[in-house]
Length: 269
Image 1 (cartoon, rainbow, N blue to C red):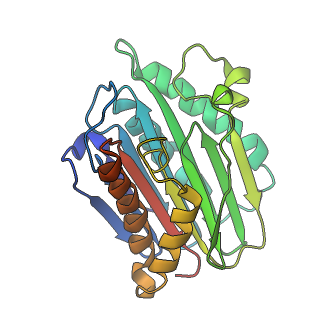
Image 2 (cartoon, rainbow, N blue to C red; image 1 turned 30 degrees about the horizontal axis):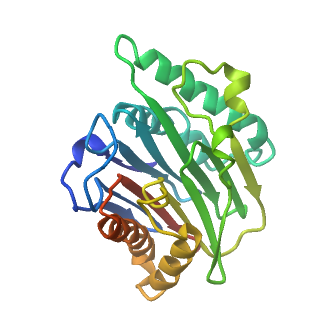
């Protein structure tokens, strides 16, 4: 299994972009295009990761609230404990049990975060992840918090795990939530017979009101179209960087910044 991981605590230069690409997967990360205008703990609290085998890929983005440690902790746990199982050649029943798998994984991440926060609080964290298994034509998604997961088909984008009302949002690492309360904030999806298109993930640096772009879904579609003009092996990198740079352009225009992490996968690339 090949992996990639970008952590905000290692990328704190304003208006700079870090990216990693390997075959059909890519991730990109930036502190943002403008300084934050709200209270925060660390300059860059986002992170992104991928895991890839010849059978499947996992992509994930995370956004730490009040500290970079939460996003790093969540993605490191995913790579260490879950990605190998999801990208293995014999994950035949994964789609059938995803509705049970999602809350089990979220609970594992929650407990890991809470253990890691002692003696210092580690902060709340959002997460969006997807597992794509081209051999079976499956696409599995999971989101907690306000990060995004877009699927692009025929130059059109849609959000696979649409954001709920803000009052219904839940966050990993919130010690006031028991397992049942946290599970109400899980948004999961299973799609079958997938044979083409692309996936784009982004943290809320893309969409935050007064900071990000006005139309996040439209921006994802436009970046996917632009990436189609790149060589096949570079489409994911182009898509991830395009969406990141769209967010950063909005930060500059709005004179208000946020961290931004993206990830991309091109089906069949």
